[in-house]
Image 1 (cartoon, rainbow, N blue to C red):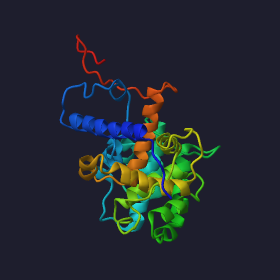
Image 2 (image 1 turned 90 degrees about the vertical axis):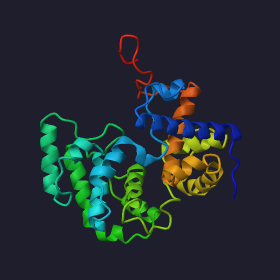
Image 3 (image 1 turned 135 degrees about the horizontal axis):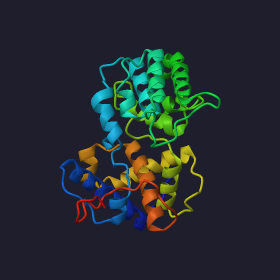
Amino acid sequence: MTFAFAPAEVEILVYWMIERDRIRMLKETDAPKPWTADPLLRDYRWCNVRRMDDRVSQWLLEHWYDPRHDPEYQLYDALLARLINWPDSLGEVLDVREFEHVRSTLTARAARGEKVFTGAYVVPGVPGKNKVDSILDLVIAVADKSAEILKCSSMRDTWARLTRFDGIGSFLAGQIVSDLARQGVGMEWPDAGTWAPIGPGSARGINRLLGRPKDRRVPQAEFELLLPELMTALEPRVRGLWKDRGLVAMDIQNCLCEFDKYRRLTLGEGKVRARYAGKGPGPQGALL
């Protein structure tokens, strides 16, 4: 089966990818703002083209993940990393295998009035139970089935197994397996670079590329057919970026979400909360 992507929409996605990564490079070299003339890319917050270039992911690679850890340890690493997703909290954890230590550490942080979890996405909780206990009880439940999970032989199968747990939806399971795919656990998965789960944003993004109503339902099975074709269409258009950043399917899925947000703004379909002071200092040195 082949799908016809709308050339004009693909052009916008290619532009977004190239310009967003150019902004990343300028920021990393401490170039002065503004890093782009595009007011939307300048004035709003955006994920990077490569998912692991985002700030929290960079911290995880530098301070948290270690491919020398055994598979079970790596699973706990990834679970806590993405369920908490806040470096200051993770930095206080001494041993991810000591679940009650993790619980008491996060509980003490919450009692001090300090931020415990990310604000980037919704972290699951259980009604009638505080969020720290909800998360740790979920991690313990997964740990009890860790041998079964680690027997999964592909990224997709591991994702599907994780989604059976209450509190781990498709998005969170995707974040966890994507991190495992870059560590020792997932290095042998045949689909580590070619598979990704669909989410609400990537569904709208792929619909826009196909010229369909943006809210049309896209089943996971259909997305698994669409994504390789999109990757084949994009790679020649952004070959230098693709090779330099080592892009994989999860990165393209991530780009689809950001592409949807970009089109939402350009088409005036709604507002986006996450603003960014991208203009640089004004005449009196105040950030604009």
